[in-house]
Length: 404
Image (cartoon, rainbow, N blue to C red):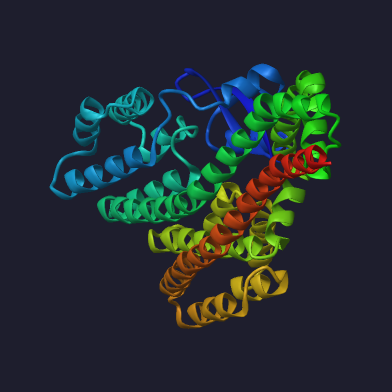
């Protein structure tokens, strides 16, 4: 998928700008038209300024902001407050300026006669398709407070998995960065003076010392090229992830990696199952649920599976049959989906699948961490030993030369 900038007008003639992901500009335009907008322009996002605009801003909306919004809105609606009053209260107490402005605008649109879901669709850059569709289902079923409560649990579960992954990666990343800086510092500052002493004494340099010294010469002579290469690699990787082919390749590569691939697959299965369950239990029809899932799933491999499932179900097939044919989900998840379809309790069965794989993700993260940490210690120890050897071996050679 790619990102597209668009300009549209709503039914009141108000101009709206935003960004939406899609396979082509025509698909995005059709989707905007289905939402009731008059499309003015749809253009693929790109270029340096678009890249800058995607960098995190000071007003980035955090997960905690969404949790507070859904939980408090659910509580106030359940207590009998009208939707507009509840939104106005939330707009007053919300600190994030982007979210505050969006909530106030949504409340104003609802007072003007729009439904909650219609008002949220004007801010799809802030509220996800999952969020909007669950709200729409809650409005139709008349249980908006319950739907918002379930949405709170869903957001917390997703944030919990993300936080566990970040926590597991924090120590290894810090250790690698620190080791890299220490090695570069020694190569650039300490080693040249040290090598000069032995060269003046005409002591031949051992291989470890010679390797580090050559690295020092390369860094000093080509530091600008190294920086340019790293920047170009980062930008190239960024735009490759934005292209459909590049993202599909990287997503498939991640899923096929040993150890990490198994963990990534479990995360995607847990996310798929939790989202499917949340939408179904909120009253969203199956086809609309699958359409929403295909647009909100980040991994392009699983997004493709969901799109194929949507077409298969639309033609009269079952969810479990297509999931089995895809080969991307394990037999346990497919079997539980089949049982859920047969008993009419698919939402409950997918909740159980999500719970199982979220627990499995937790155990997998612990196992990966337990494996990675000693490997990193061995790696860092090897680097330290190599540096020690590059310093000590010339000293031994100098002592041997002086004795002769």
